[in-house]
Amino acid sequence: MLDLLATAYPWVKAMHVVSVIAWMAGLFYLPRLYVYHAEQVQAELTQAEDMFCTMERRLLRAIMNPAMISTWIFGLLLVATPGIVDWSMVWPWAKAASVLAMSWFHMWLAARRKDFAAGRNVRSGRTYRMMNEVPTLLMLIIVFAVIVKF
Image (tube, rainbow, N blue to C red; front, side, top):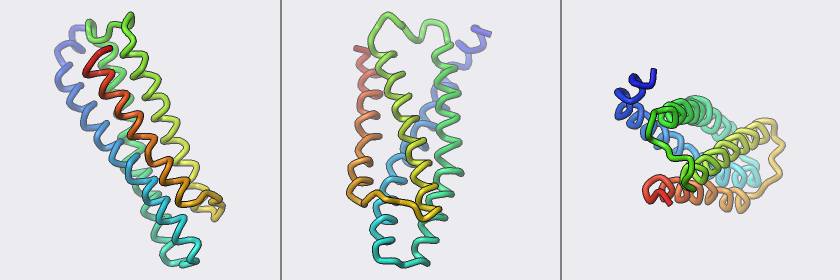
């Protein structure tokens, strides 16, 4: 099994990177949709609200959820590949903590989508603008941890 992981390493790494890109695109875009949705609801345009709910649901279910799952699967395969991760260093722990935080943020966004769909959103566009910075900060930690290997 370990020989197979070592042989497949470049392919697994490529699939991990593709999955991360798709996941990050959704993590950047969904909070922006929430900003517009929260501000549109204040204007009470129900047709626009239905459109936002549809866009948010499709983005989360068709792109973000599969991308997060594949990111985790390929990432765990990379971790299981012999000689790739030195757990005595700080970087894998920083990356792991950041990926867990990114996953929590994903779940937080999914809960907010349910709030919007049920007409229970209580957060402002400003809140979603601020939360839109979370994936950027986590991405910076992850990229610098993996590339610099501090």
